[in-house]
Amino acid sequence: MTRLTKKYLFYILILLCTASFGQSKKFKVVLDAGHGGGDEGTAHNSYKEKAIVLSVALKIGKILEDEPGFNVVYTRKTDVFIELRERANIANKADADLFVSIHCNGVNAEQAQGTETFVMGLSRSKINLEVARKENSVITLEKDYKLKYKGFNPDNPDTTIGIALAQEESLNQSIILAGKIRDGFKNDLKKNDRGIKQIPLWVLDATAMPGVLIELGFISNKAEGAYLNSADGQEEMAKSIAKAIISYKKMFDGNASDSEQQAEITEAVKEVTSDKKNEVEPEAEQKDTVAKAGVVFKVQISSSGRDLATKPSNFKGLKNISKLKSGSQIKYFYGETTDYSKTAKLLSEAKSKGFTSAYVVAFRKNKIISIAEALK
Image (cartoon, rainbow, N blue to C red; front, side, top):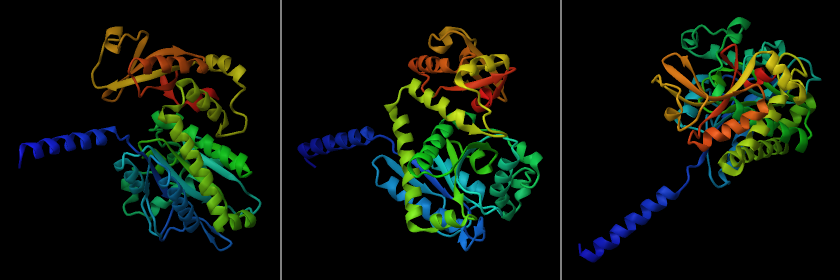
């Protein structure tokens, strides 16, 4: 090989490497069509949940795959049964940015109708727990489910309530996505809105990224069931969900400021319901109510196995650092306020110092609680 040839090969390699490093990481979305195989989900009026949700999931995926910057992963693309834990494993192994699980509702009362979007939570609402029981009950079809799910019994409300909220870090992002999905259903498709709700669901609990579970509507309602079973209805629902996901991606691609993100979280959190309507008080009253409840907000900036002194030199100059031991890890927090609207400024300050993965958490009596619970 001549010296000239080697020189050209060298430059080609440099160009290839530069192009490779210059490519931004694609936004990875896991689409989970609920149920499948021997698990039909809910079935009414000859409409089967497992078939409808698979069709909608594939349509959403096709839209996203045609969008630049997206990578779509499916938990299933055919009529097969996938265990709940495996659905979560697929998302975790893929290192996904979002997990979206698609379902349909069905009850004995034909008049029930409307869409719902769920995020992980610990609501004790009887209605919400019934949804959780139905969606979680699929685990009984799995071998050794009592061992794999550590005694969890979908028919026992006590164990349903006892599921740990492991995804507090992702909850705000999940609520934002749920809000965008709800807005599309309500404003664009004019669907009856049953709200954004928090319930304990294994499939969301086990995933390590923001996620939502969508109930497209009630196939037990003849009119709504016929719509969801139609090609046009499935296409409309898919387009609406895809639009929400695309909007979410743009928001976290650096196209929205921290204050804009925090404002959207605040608005979405107001719509999260659990035990009863109107649990979240008007914004003007929230600050006083939160303070009286002993709730404070902080920004978590890091978690480490090392116990560091809370001096500014250890945290890139940030003052007012506190810490909390959680198992073998120690969590470090910046700032403190009883006014949720002021957390945007704290979050921006933390990120400007290099803590780019910082996020807002809420405390009551020195224990971490969900943002939604803190604002109620």
